[in-house]
Image 1 (cartoon, rainbow, N blue to C red):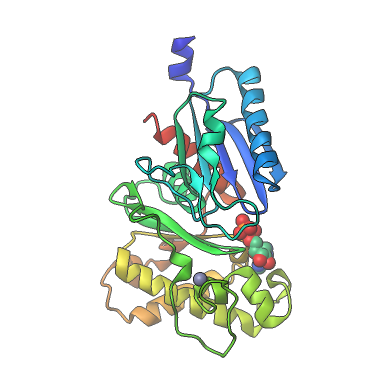
Image 2 (image 1 turned 90 degrees about the vertical axis):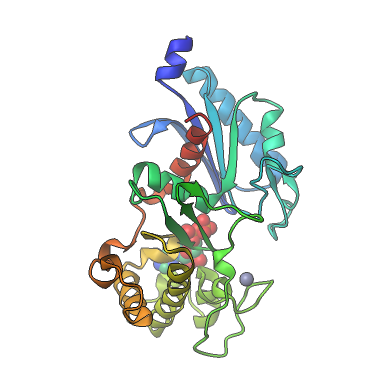
Length: 301
Ligand code: ADP
Ligand code: ZN
């Protein structure tokens, strides 16, 4: 048994999103042995379903090696903090100050990794996807909100708490007030999916590629990338999330980033090979849950 455990590990990944949870178990994208999804409701009900999933996995496939949680936030990812493993000040109804890891520890005496959804997705892309072989890169999601995570010199980005790349200030093109409850017209307040819908009176997925909304969106995202390139010097930038299903945004953003940096950052990655520098996630729809599995794996590797 012990030998099987070591050579054939079983990692559980919990992608905890604001609208749905995705749970999977296995050892990587080519070895997914279980996967379930359910809507995010109350913490008690939702975490109960997570615990049921983990018990079912153990019954069907044997002992788990570790659990990884990649969650919406803000959250506390610092193992030395008294509130490690908590979702903290989230505006999501009922979830503020939820002891996520504590709820799992009541049932499982296993290593549990806990990080932001975007740090998880970044780690998954590093392990199996678009960031393999790099040590400094970022992953941004442009969806219901905007969030950024990533790695610097091989370490996932943490600090005082964790980065909040969606809440930077940018130069605005019009007088739309923005919809971030904290900052109004921060990047997320102007450029996340719901902000596009508010600004233009139509769901982002229904706006055609020639709609003026997309030039504005590309401008805002390019401004943000200019800032992140100049602050973190990432070797690559991965852009995921529902809004980036608008694939025409990629060339527009790349061109604007080059224009905005104006030759100042002297790297062929930006000057000549920007198509490989600003890229979509390679793990597609599974980026989130595979990221959570990669977090689990990181507790033992
Ligand atoms: P979440 O951020 O909740 O995990 P998503 O990444 O799917 O979920 O983001 C949802 C947001 O993305 C919504 O605001 C939605 O309008 C927008 N969205 C989803 N699909 C598309 C699309 N094909 N084109 C543009 N926007 C989209
Ligand atoms: Zn904000």
